[in-house]
Amino acid sequence: MAETGRIPLTVALPTLPRKPEECPAWAARLTAALSAHFRRLGQATSTGIAGAGGVSLPVSIANGGTGQTTAIAAFDGLDPLTAKGDLIVHDGTHSVRHAVGTDTFVLTADAAQTDGVKWAAAPGASSLTLTEVEKDLGVAAYSGTFDITGLAGLTASKQVLIVQKAGPYTGKGDRQDEAEMDQVAATGYVVDANTIRAYWVCQPYSGPVAGNVKFGWAVSA
Image (cartoon, rainbow, N blue to C red; front, side, top):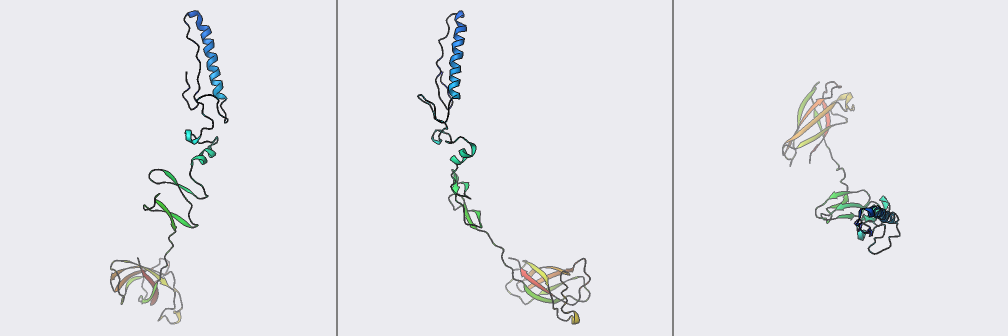
């Protein structure tokens, strides 16, 4: 009988008995043959197994193994990584090494690359420049609107960021340097190429706002 696992061994079986009275002796010989077979399996070590057709342990990669005897070493024996920070990615056919990138770069999908990804500089926060405008909000008002006019090249319906800015405020008399910050919340949109319309309201914890207040505005991208 030939062992069909990864370590092929041959077991010499005794001839089948011809008479009933020969069965006990045959069973004893069969037991001895199988015991010897399993002893040989148990004796397989990293030095290999002697005999024709034997496969050395650990099983090499060429023979379907990893060439290693522990889990971590076995994984290391198969993975393609070579440097700290390397990644395994799939190129559509195989799992391959993608070399570590430059510090602070981020992994970005890119179908034009062989393995479908690349390292690229992280997108930074874009700076936003606010244009200042001062508007008279009226007398003791809690909410209202105002237009910013005389502009050019705007795109209708674009959203507009509007924030209150610190004073001094024109026409406030002895209160012209009072910041009144965080008293007014505002938003707006582009009416047409030349005009922005703003909507403002007093914060719940503040009283009515009177007179001029400065705002900074910027049209969304």
